[in-house]
Image (tube, rainbow, N blue to C red):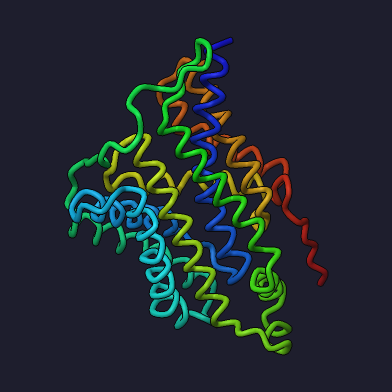
Length: 290
């Protein structure tokens, strides 16, 4: 029983980070129609910014997190304005290649600026795990799960505000949004900025669980099965699917005696979902009439 609870805790903490990354991708897709392949690299840059503030500049860790958020916000705005705004009206393949090139650029800049060494954040949580009966829960997992859940709740509340509703209108029909006075360009920039903030928090959470190196950006690839399972345009779907994939991955690592299977298991889920229900659990089934 204790082992089962331990697997659930680990899976939920990991799945919450997957959901956080997927939420950023869904937000950009809902608002701009762009599938952002570079979301994992935004995660990477955000984590290194926080590391620099806390370890190199001596800023207390919790203050460093708060300072990282406006930095990520500005980075998202800058990327949208310089890289994505000129691609408006261009073929979809060109936009996808742009985000792919952006992913390589951000990863390369990160390695150039900070180097390829593996690093760790300063100790900021109790080293002794939390004891609940015979179950031991690391405070790093509690922190990661708490951060992810707080931001997920924030996303849910944000989409009920006037600005959140404007984003939803833009995602449905940009011409109608412009006709009603919504500044579509501002919405595009805001979507990228908020998504970069979500990625930064995901990167910090992930780095506290494992370690900080330039490979943590690759976890962005694990968001693909999550958003396909949840539905490409569904915020609730990204949350549910992220937690589900984290749990399934945790149980697969424990009960399937293949060391490499945990790495490919999310993509097995991706293939099965595409075959059985390609629009996801919460996605909209769109029918084109010709």
